[in-house]
Amino acid sequence: MNNIQSNAARILQNNKAEILDQWHQQLILNTKSLVESIGLNVMKQRTEEFLDTLIDALTQDDDFEGDSYDNARNLMTDISRQMTLSSLTPSEVTLFVFSLRDIIFPLFQTNMDAGQLAAHYSLVNSLIDRLGVFTFTVYQESREELMREQQQAFMEVSVPVVRIWDRIIMIPLVGMLDSSRTQQMMETMLTALEDYQSKVAIMDISGIPVVDTLVARHLITAASAARLMGAECIITGIRARISQTLVQLGVDLSGFITRTTLADGLQLALKMTDQKIG
Amino acid sequence: MKGPSSKDSLDISVANYEDVILARQKARELMQSMGFSLLAQTRMVTAVSELARNMVVHAGRGQMSVNSVEKLNQKGIECIFQDKGPGIQNIDQALRQGFSTSNSLGLGLGGAKKLCAEFDIQTTVGKGTRVTIREWKTR
Image (tube, rainbow over all chains, first blue to last red; front, side, top):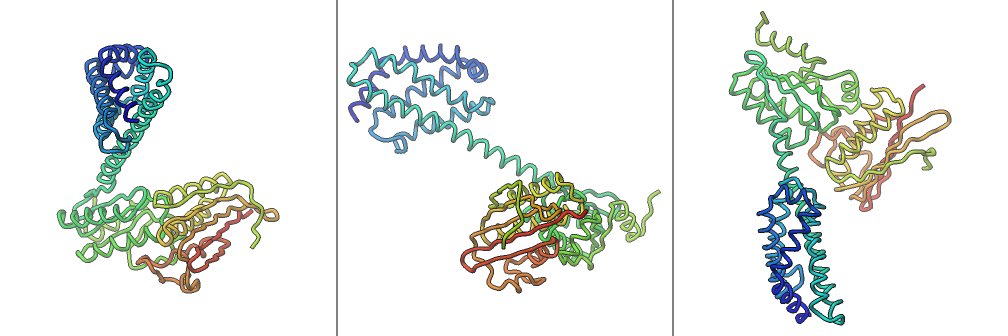
């Protein structure tokens, strides 16, 4: 095994310039979009780094999961991330790695006798396969990271508090009200109550598709917290079907002021704060 | 208990709160396509929400299947929630208003029972729980 690895490494090292040259040509021919999006110079730099790492990895007697392949994996991570950022598809990134195989194999053929060939093929084959598959893992990871970031960004905009009139704030609730969003909603609402010296908070649940016991519990918690600060909560957007469902569920909202429409809620809020529009 | 014959069937594995949303959407979609009233949809979907979340909270994960069913001349929807969780020690207590082992309102399971036309629960402590709910289209 060791013998084959070092032999393969030697052949690659001796023909480095030729391999790179052919690889570049192949990449320019077959994966045009890749070369276009990362640029010719970056591509040349990347291919050279990659080949160096591959040779380096081959000279170590270790398998792909081992420590000596850390460099190879790190470089692969780096390359796939960069390419993903340039909005290349994972297939294109994988092709970048796989295309090297077509160049190495003919080289082996001219440099050794048939008896040795099979072992060398399978070694380089499995190595390149693993590196190629690895790019997919990296691609997926970077996508998931992006998704987490977007989720975070979405969380921040998802609970706006609007000051609609003097001493009246409104919180339009949309989508799913889970624990972390409720926590955020409460914080924003309570801070706004303090900042604007508001006396009434209108929570509009028109945009919540399913009002179940969890949503109800969150609403009750938020309304109770507001009440502790001397403010009243008006829950608006309770439509006929939601009202019936809540009663059947046994949710008791009788301690809270509720209205069907936001307009009704606003009217009531104005009355509670002794104000008139116009 | 032998259920009515089923036609379409859809299985969803429920392991987190996002899956609960998906479960709700699938139930709603089927009810919409069958022409259930908005009120019936809301009731059933709310029950689905409670039962699917119960699986996540108490059993960690579970399976929900949504089926369209028929009996005599009536069409209906059936949702089966099956988990391999700890089971329920005392069903009567669990169905009672305000009883909860998880710091919730304690209305979900009992509420789900009241929300749909048919409700069946089978549970074995240490083995898991199976809840079947059905709603029939009135005509």
